[in-house]
Image (cartoon, rainbow, N blue to C red; front, side, top):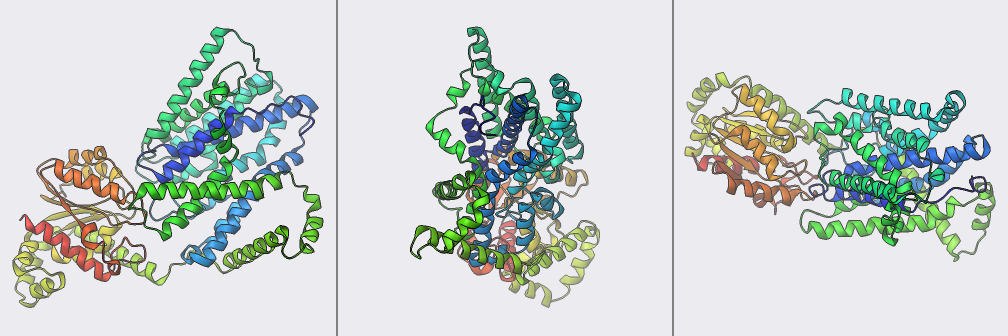
Length: 622
């Protein structure tokens, strides 16, 4: 657009908005307990993008009475594609060389990212944005780029049709608002409380409303038509609205948890409206918000916000796979932020900026010059290294398996699946347990074998046979449930892969309503994400003080919430007289050989130790 958009102005405050958005997203991933609503930064990005793109299209139309759609696509690709391709090549090469467990589905991830359909690819493959344990990959975050780029592909065409057919900008504004409202309603309709919300969170149809709201704003609030000189009272009103929107948005980024139904029943829509207000006031030259959001730090972050967002997940996933971040969490958080910013700066200087102004018609000539350049020149060295990385990445993409499970993962999955089926039977077979117990007590060999296996004395084995226990937890509980039901034949096991503590009060209430909560309760939760003391208090509101509640802490050294979870559980054991802590972390921490490669789920040897510890602690107070 260059020369034709002579009245276009760069709104520096938008760098401030982008900075707040990307800081929210990064801290949501690095400090989920402190930045609980940081995922909403993506919503802010969507609104800013919708406004800027539509505002530029309006400027082009007003000045030329036409839209060069081909040039629009070309500019978008020059802006977005180089850094994306660089990230994909770099990540694929790193995976191929150093982290081959992530080769699985690499090809699907890369191809869907290049075609900007990664959001639907992840939905179709059952990926979850909110499963912080088992579904994380270096490409999880590409879903939002896919949604945004899908909009870039269709919006210029729809824009031209609206301008030519509807013409009246007020009517166009109302039409876009209606479409946005329909998208938000679709999110609410498709959302199912208690189930993973990834479908409505990733779906283009259910997320488009944020971009549409930004686009609608451009029709009634074009940046080039706003007056710099306005009455003092009007300026005060604008500043008040903008400051209020900014404060509410920051509060949402800090406090609005993703597991609240409100988020999908209009919460994200309301955050989008707050973002619209913030964008509108920042764009107005008569208000002060643009100046307030303009400073060198925000300018630096804002200009690199795309790269920071792009490289965050690869850096975090690769770093945390090699280093146990649970200890010295803050130190590792700072290290990861430094690495993200360092990689982003390299990309910005040597990829994004040069290729944004590069004339791709000169590609062949540039390659020819590079090929014949001196061997020790920077250009030649850069060409050799980039070619080598690309070759390694291509090899990895070609050899990458699809939906493959290695032998150890298969063993763990089979163990959990078999134990889950067995656990489901315990819920319907407790009535016959007493008869089975009487038969096994006649055998002189059975108690001795059981005692030897789990390092229990005869008195403990006898007590365990009579004790009714309800065990409730996640995949770690399921991994060890076979041994637990051997020790406690009257145990009811309710386990689910990916279960989080903050989702559990309603599930425990259902067990209570079915009269399946025994006097002794075992809780094995915390593997899949952090929770607060208030979350645990909700569980205790369901359980009350009539039950003896045993909570087993977590061993998840590659997840930053491990120590927070264990501290919260220890505090709960101090706070509630009927809550008792089982220190699995302390008992197992020096025994890597007790775990599968994920360092979380106990293997065959570890399961015996897991069951031994739980049995000892539960039977101690009987």
